[in-house]
Image (cartoon, rainbow, N blue to C red):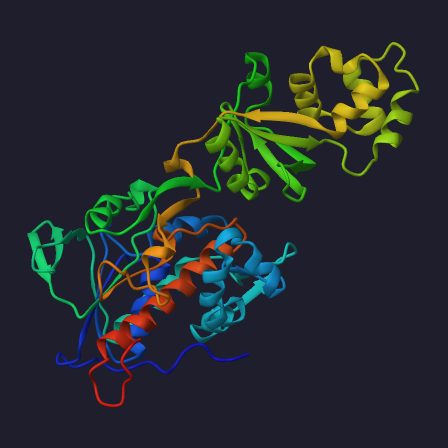
Length: 426
């Protein structure tokens, strides 16, 4: 496996050209790391009291770094943006990310689902080692400091408890996140700042999110908070997906729903409603179901009959009753068809602050190929503030790391463009 890291650098002299990285999540930290590797004195600022708080929170249930699936399949997860994202991943993909973790002293393992985790499943030890190494390389970190845009002279405006401060870096990397998890600093306040500077920014929308639907009071009381397992869900022309999701007071959420959030959100945008088709018995075909249902239930209740005949019970039976209606139980053919194709109508996404990630952000068309803003030369964007999205499973974090490295490398070339032996960026 190719090594992704060079050896640590010593403290950089004050005369070294300067770069400013704003946002201390994975993308920002990675951009800072590359700048330091290239010999660029770098300052990192973060609005929160400490770095990478969302990274730590996301890792509480086990830090999913990346995924082990074949690279072409991996890249396809980025849907419409797989082209530009693949450019990042060609330089720093799943294999390079695992090697980077190894260089940091963190072993990784592959779970049964193909997801890759630190061997201890924790984010804290990795983050502490990473920040310690960056500080040893000369990184200056300032927390509690917000990005406030640029003044009329093009200087970067920063604000903290001491008031406003100005910076005149030779290169700036913005890694400000989306607008979800605002309590951790990702508020999306940067959107209007960049728009006012002439940058084309797509509206931020929830991704990997829950959706709302109308449940009866009886259904909510009985099933809110209950998982629905072993089902297949289909949305429009998307390939069917197998998995599980959670019923909530407001609707549905969970891994299977998150994986379908992009096409569901598109349907909501286009028509004001979205539809998921559920197969409650994916291991049986329609004919087999009809045959089992034609045996007659006698004096047994429907719930007991379906439990014994088809193992449909609990939340799956509740969904069949709630969404199929009484007429679905009129005959074996109708009931079998509903079990195999049960429509779930969704009316809205849950609020963006509840979402795992965001869609929208700085459009690729607003940036050069290397990620520099066309409207703001010398400024790069990385991470979730760029207009791409991906399902959970390690894809989000991998692209954040990779985009940060790409932005840091391009910013370093820009800073060093007038130094002897360094080619001017095209």
